[in-house]
Length: 255
Image (cartoon, rainbow, N blue to C red):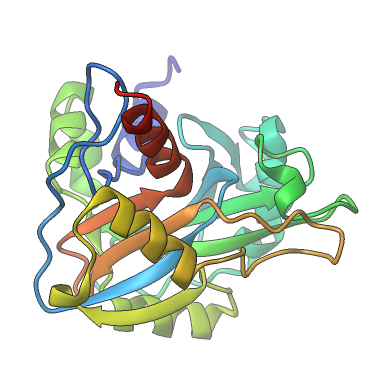
């Protein structure tokens, strides 16, 4: 991306990595025994297995649409890349979003686009070629950040510089804009969260035996996992079925 402004915007609005609930062992990809520390109420949401999309909304109503890694489209076709079907899925929503931030910040809507031919788990959500999206986060960014160099922006982003909406604000925005959010499964006290690897695998199965966002009756129905977050979103982690199944298999084989 040669345009410095677009490069800065892309860097500032990327979604930061979410750590796993049990940390990954860098040596073998298995899970370690310690867990992410949560306190207070913890909201459980379904982790949908598709592709990460984002809508970057400016105070004047201009917008960009991006994938996890790059900007794909801007209002008026100033930028256009049909990769992964993200633009086709999100452009109608982006065109009707209304700026709502009184402090003139840039809003970034993070959505999971999933379904037909999107990712390896597409058939778990549809057998009839359907595509949909679910909102999972909203961040606010001050325009001044775009004046920084990209290395500084990356460091700022990866160290929590983006200001994410808490659960109540996220729900209000979703309702106001008519956007469905990722399914809310439960709210638990942190003391009720599982600790061990086997315990967490069983816990995942109990709370999410099948996806709640299947798009038709021919979907396979297997869920990817659960995202855990505090109400204020100060702590967030993900727990994926495949990570626990892989770790348990490796341990059963003495590895």
